[in-house]
Length: 95
Picture 1 (cartoon, rainbow, N blue to C red):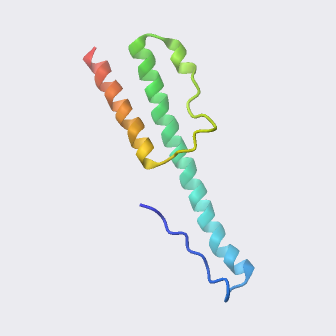
Picture 2 (tube, rainbow, N blue to C red):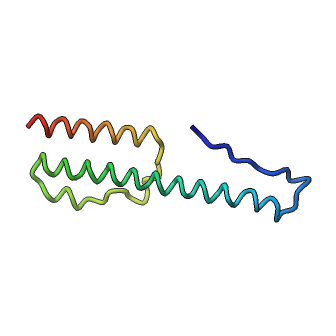
């Protein structure tokens, strides 16, 4: 589900009016991006914790959870991490 970014008609509206339409949409996108980052951090944190518990290696907990060059915050990537988390959860239960 992708939100449509609605641009006002440049020919009939002033710059101030255009900004009044664009700024709230931009803030909404920023908010959604921050929420998505939180979801990634939470899932990755759980993955690190379970990996550490399974392997018995506490050093895995200190690994950076979301590097600055990791900008792929797509739902597909989040689903991949969630699948990885579920696999680790099943593995832990199997122990």
